[in-house]
Length: 588
Image: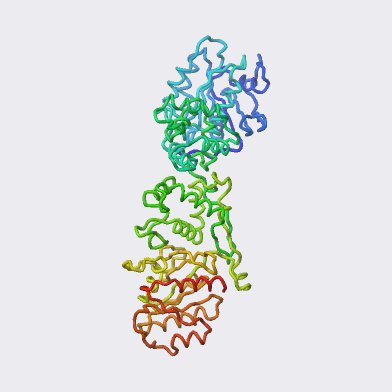
């Protein structure tokens, strides 16, 4: 089913048999008195926003079959947002025509994938002393687009304003996306949305909403505090109507969903819709694009990091879902974190961020992974922060969770970087030990290395990256190592493979032709650039072989005013190389 977006102006059309009181209803609404003599058809009227309960301008259109053709009526149906079909309660034949003619006619003139809401209006209740609502509901069950049925009287003004208000509500707070009239319960999509909302509002993650959490929810959704007496009454209603709705004086997920079902059954659709919209849902109960993706523009030369506010939110989220309080998120806990998201955004965590021996995510690893995603895929960070409730809990857009660094040109001019996240590209010939360096950075160099399947030319891949923290003169910085996959020595490097904060050119000290490759890479891509370069000789446990190149590594480094070659032995697993790389990035 497709649902239309909320219109800026609500257009209501009144249909029905002649003399059922359509025009009288409109005039009674406008003049607040009953007119004995009415024209065959009222002119279209516009009710200003400031006099409507929902603060939305409303156009009301009268239809008269003696003055309009069927084609013109069909056009009016197409333009309308909601249709009121009026019949006279004292004339059974007018009610019969609702089901036999008007409802099929309306359906025929609506798109197949979108049925406009219909209000069935029984006018002239001043002429009878009984209710015919039960008869109307029999019709409504056959036509799900019937939003509600109302009895009213244009003569006594009974329920006239309520009729138009409910027509307005049927457009602004439609029932069908959130409630199944046939099944008398919330739709699955509505339950799913409310489940996400419940989990976000469950600030301490104990599976229930206590008084403090309910108060926060109430204040942020409706901008008014919840009186203690009202809260007690709400709990009492839940407890009386559904088993397991209240636990230890707190509202459970079951109770929360029941409460919204009750709101809708009592005609308070707007309450549930206010909550859903506060949490970013549109009329199809999908999260809106503007809610998921904050409008964050990153100038050329700048990068993106988590702000202090973003880090604080994510730290609290980690602590919320670390239910066993062991300082780590196991696979079940990670699944719980992202249970209100489309899917878990990360895989292969052990080879990307610091974990414990079992591969469980530490707080350090958690912050590292978010930092990496923010650096490489800001859109995903924005979306997942929204899924996880940042907008609601922080009362702000995801923009406040992101810090945009200054232009790198300024860092170079000042010879000091203002960034907290540095990108280091690991470049070297095949089998020279690039992957071993990355694994050592995470403390898992002992793990068996599987053949890599990285694609060259992918500018945004995170598969060949790992990230950890490094201390630079006592300050914690994030260092991202990105392994540049080399298939053939003759392959040129792409601009995105060269551009970084610091380059680590790697060669195998035991392979005589290994250094030649990185020497040529340096001369071709880095000699004239502002990118700091560190040359690292791997497999330091082996005998150092003389390199078959015009200059030996130490002489080459001296000629180009580089630091002497650093020798790396995975068995020693020292972090000196990583500290040097981060320091060079911090002071380009």
